Length: 118
Image 1 (tube, rainbow, N blue to C red):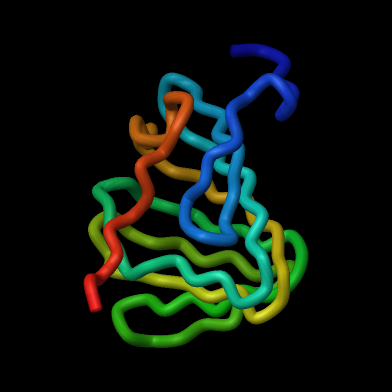
Image 2: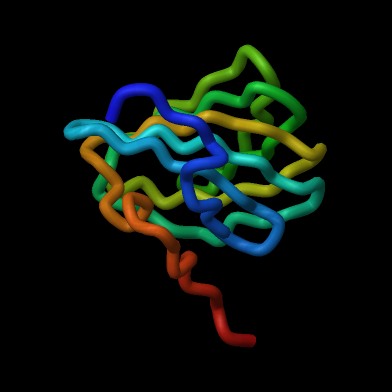
């Protein structure tokens, strides 16, 4: 892919208040994420390994029922198929690395994670 500018990529809406740009190579997807304060990432899992790097703000990540507060300098490594969810305690920016490639992030839109009907 070479040199990439976010302005040339589609902005993906991951969930309400969560937007991202995805850079995809042959082997990994790197997701640059902006999360509004209070935004929720629904509980989900995927077959990809994920490395969550918080660059700015504070993200509460719930992994298999246990809460972790991630701030700049913290990294969470999620093995494939681990159930997780999140909430922005403060508006934050994060860089997520997925292996193998997240094919659902490789196109021009993302359908979003399923939400529970209430």
